[in-house]
Image (cartoon, rainbow, N blue to C red; front, side, top):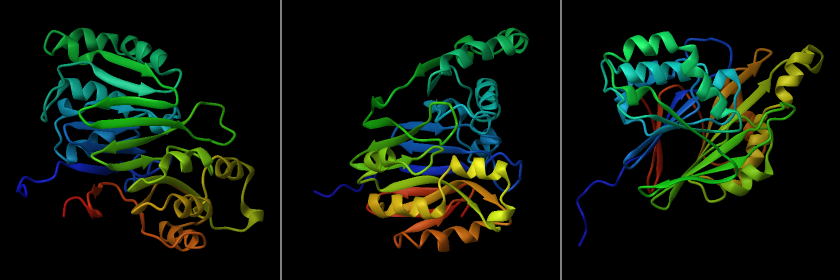
Length: 294
């Protein structure tokens, strides 16, 4: 007998698709994944709480936060999610500890943040649930890092170029469907291996539109730590997702977001979109996108 019940939600929402420049149309890197009963946030860049508030998702419903690496543009929104989520107005107060998964150094960060905000926490603890301000940190290595309620999250190492810090991507599997979040990475064979068979891949990108002579040493260094559209296109052509979406857009030398797809087409002719803040991607028999609200 056919069931009339709707299929459980498996949705990826790009809360922020930008990079360090503090522009208003692209907040810092942050991705919300809703899979059945779980709601996870991957990275917490600038404006993460504001975007979550726009979606009217109760702060207390967030199951936890996964960090890809410890660059500040992926972290500066974390304290807002943590502290404002505890206060809870107007969308649902967090009453249990906030779980955080991340690379080496995550435990140290989560131990010191309560010290930095000790005065605020002491005062507010008279009015808000003490358990809700606690941070529970787990430092990850490559492999399965979460497996509960039918949701499996697997961490895999990526290559952030010359940056001397551990960096990870994540694969989320739910009901025989999957989404991959690249994190910051150059071209990565390990990412390709872990992304095979994924329905959706959300991948970072960086590009420079000027001449080679105009590309400053600083820009050269940054570009060497990220993936060009051509490199990402090779990744997509080998992974063959139902949809590839760009996030964490680094655009230099007059490059524009609309330049990304033509450059990618040199190596990939499959389904592709340039992500925007509050783009929602539903993963079912088909992978569909819409901009919130719509």
